[in-house]
Length: 440
Ligand code: SF4
Ligand code: SF4
Image 1 (cartoon, rainbow, N blue to C red):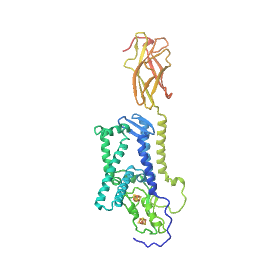
Image 2 (spheres, rainbow, N blue to C red; image 1 turned 90 degrees about the vertical axis):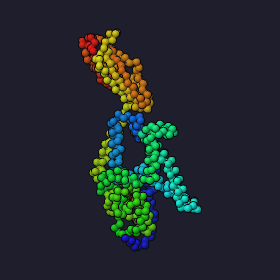
Image 3 (cartoon, rainbow, N blue to C red; image 1 turned 180 degrees about the vertical axis):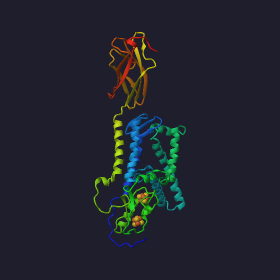
Image 4 (cartoon, protein in one colour; image 1 turned 45 degrees about the vertical axis):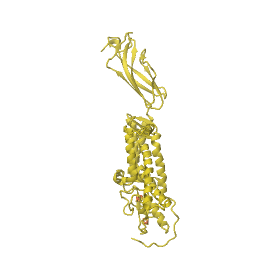
């Protein structure tokens, strides 16, 4: 309904622009998206079966750390959805960032041809703009697909495959497929992905409640002048005035800027705002800091406590992690054997894994078994970064009255580089009476 608005002096333009804020956040997110795999901040290396997280190279069998890392990341998404609704979609999601960038590029190219090729027919200008757009998008798709696949394949390895135009190995085929999908996505699908394929919008419907951050329209005074600028700027093609709960709305805030821009010229405040829940607080009271951050009820406190729990678990698991993993076990296919020199020998099997980025060396020593000799050709044992080593050694003792049939002792494995030690309680088996016959 068109309403006659009483003329009022214009208000100064809004100092705050959610569009500008969003573009700045998009740039930061884009740089983070580029940096994460190349700096090993977060990357699954599928061929090598490694998970890189916060600079740590985690082996696939380090289940505890990977579990806490994945649960922590999952709860970051849950907490952001409960507190801030679909702000992730509008501000942080790569699909949205690249969809908007591709749309902006297409419009910019069309405008350029309109301005600089005014003597061409409209059809020619449009064709030339689209041809250039597809060309630029093809190059960008190769680049984006490269970065995306680098989350799963080591970047230098991937670059070598790209240079060789490898479409035979799994990595090369994946790269080619992702390039094609990226190209089609950002030329044809764009934001349609958000309302058709992406499950996050539907998930948000389950996680949100009366205190979740929303973009809402309130017009009790009937100040709306029906200019429809809020609808025209909406990249999702919706009218926020109908409902704040439309599945298409990504809470980007562009309609807030648009309405402020229009109504301030006629001396009115905008009618669209970010609000906690559907109902705007119009009391003007200053709210405590935790409510302004979105911590508005017990549910949010619980969600943040769970997030804190997983963050603490991850921190503890990472701080307890050792670069060199040592395992030691007795070989009991033969309980003991008597050597030609008369000594009694027990056999042990070791395995070492160097999960660090520098060479490691581990030295074994025997404790609480007087007179025992460790028969190991190489001690310390050296292990290259990322490598494993397995082997066996014997411990020999001369039969003596002080030994019992079963003798408890310890083997200490010390990592030379970082001084970390592992102590393994072991048993040394002797013939009955301390020097009996060999047992099979
Ligand atoms: S921009 Fe504001 S005034 Fe214009 S139609 Fe939208 S809500 Fe109404
Ligand atoms: S309705 Fe407003 S907040 Fe929602 S997507 Fe459209 S412009 Fe963004």
